[in-house]
Image: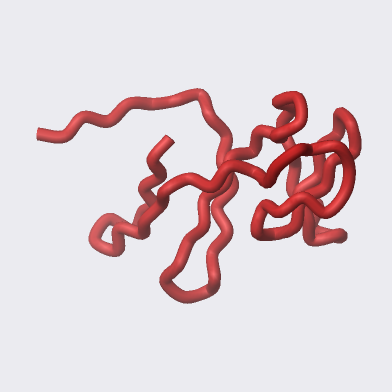
Length: 86
């Protein structure tokens, strides 16, 4: 028997268009603000202190000391869902 819990964590899922999904925390590594996807700039942006991350979560601008946290994720094709380990 497996147990599932709900966690108050926002994540971004980046799909490669085929079978791979990358899951990243939406929490900025600078001071913990929530980053947002900027479709025009194709980047994740932190509204608090100007941090900018590329689509892989790598810091490209601003004060964040490290990339967005990458989370374990897998596609469950039988359930048409994505499972993310927080």
